[in-house]
View (tube, rainbow over the protein chains, first blue to last red):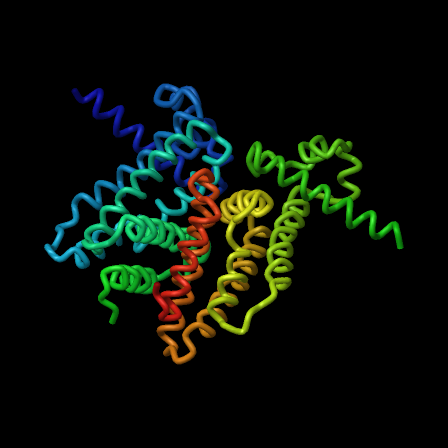
Amino acid sequence: MPKVVDRDQRRLELARAAWRVIRRDGIERASVREVAREAGLSTGSLRHYFGTQSELLIFAMRNVMEQVERRAAAVQRPNDPLAAAKLVLAELLPLDDERRAENEVWVAFMARAMVDPPLGSLRDEAYDRLREACARWVSALLPGGSEAQLQLESERLFALIDGLALHAAMRPASATAARLSAVMFHHLEQIAGRRH
Amino acid sequence: MPKVVDRDQRRLELARAAWRVIRRDGIERASVREVAREAGLSTGSLRHYFGTQSELLIFAMRNVMEQVERRAAAVQRPNDPLAAAKLVLAELLPLDDERRAENEVWVAFMARAMVDPPLGSLRDEAYDRLREACARWVSALLPGGSEAQLQLESERLFALIDGLALHAAMRPASATAARLSAVMFHHLEQIAGRRH
């Protein structure tokens, strides 16, 4: 079914064009018209793939989520939970150019989601999935932890990851991969009770 | 000089009107015209106080920064650095309605600052001030810490605070004052080496 493949491929290209507009001009400028212009299409052609700005933004946001989850799922996991947590959770941090772009777009989505109900629902879905992933890693790192301790540490880990990502978007020059990883690894080691 | 007082007071009221528009409709809608309408003024009257949207947003953003710093400065500080850190840093968390409003507006500013250079400069100023405040508290909590350790812990504390604030804006219902404080206090106790 080459038609379907083409359509999916084209939608992905348009999502990327939306990313570029969002990073350059802000999310409020990522209208159907502007994204069409960025992609070198007429507005009419773009509407063949996305009827509204909201549809386009939701697709672009879901695209970020899927990319992150695909990368995390592809990680070869060592048996040691601490080593595995470090490798998998690093996928959530903007450690290279691709992930930095993704992260900046994500920050724009988070702000917009506060006043845009359809994006808000998707944001809530992403929030819950990440929160659960943090809870699973904390359980693996703290096998004997009490309910209260696991909850506290899950919230702390989740907040730390999003805070690091937010700061990386705000101050990219000082958020080097080495510094982001060092903070994250130190935190995971402390949860696991293995400080160095 | 009643004239000057009135003018300052009026600018503050307009900043608050801008906050309300930002929280309800998003920052891109906080134009001079919309904020004037929200405040019950004509666009022409608002321009008497703020010539451009950018001026208005910068004033409103600086207003948030000053409010936070005023509150932090007003805290009675116990001699124990851990007890003092808990009290002062709690001022950065959205623990009541006023601070929740402030925090939501702040998240909108952070996203807009990524594509708006004048807001970007002010955001950088706020970033540096908060980063320094975190460094000072970490030094107080870890008096014998090495340079590397102090830097790592400052970055970690700063990211945690902003991550907690971001999550509180995203999911207000689960970010109760008790939960936010519990995570923050646990973190400060751990830095100070006093786990409970």
